[in-house]
Length: 76
Length: 232
Image (cartoon, rainbow over all chains, first blue to last red; front, top):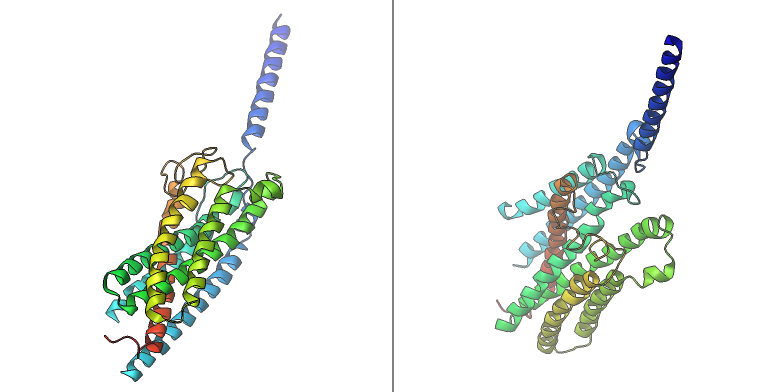
């Protein structure tokens, strides 16, 4: 009797565990993000490249601005 | 130098846009995945375009009120930089659509060519293209300024149906259509995650200020060129 009862408990636990595993597996069905790029730090390479372009662009515009200012002063 | 604080602000905001835009947390969405970060670049081009076209529109009205050629130069150069932003917005949109609509949703090229948002934006840009053609076809300075100022007001008015109204009335793949969560996709507080807004709004200001800076450079250059014509 006792043995039979413990067998039932075991079966129930097994079922519960199965459902739980299933839930966890469903929980992982998330959108793919670039987590690898973040974990190995390669994303910083992208940021560095973009920052270089942006800073270069701003330096260029700044120099143009200064040149035009000089023109404006020279003509007056 | 005191008048140049907004140029520094633009620089700082765009540095923040690139650093925060790539490194900060974004909502995890299907189909879009990591490309949601394009919001800080692609969408800002369109916002910048709208603000620059709006400024151009104001200067066209100012020109018609006093017929000062200075205002005509302002209107022309703001429209030029605005169109440039629009072309950049279109180009970045094609890349984004290629990966989210064609690859992931397996849409045919035909369905993308029928996109009301794309057609509307193309119409708006072509109307502004005609503005520059119109300007170029005049030899008389005053006539050029007058006709193109009136045309510029029409062109701005055409932005309303072509990019703000019609694409939101008909079904579209683009956010903001009735099929998706309707309304303005960028300004709807329920639609745009607060994490996105943290970078998105500064990015709009930063990109727009950069556009204004480039426009002022073009204006000043044009003013030096036309110095003999403008008696002020």
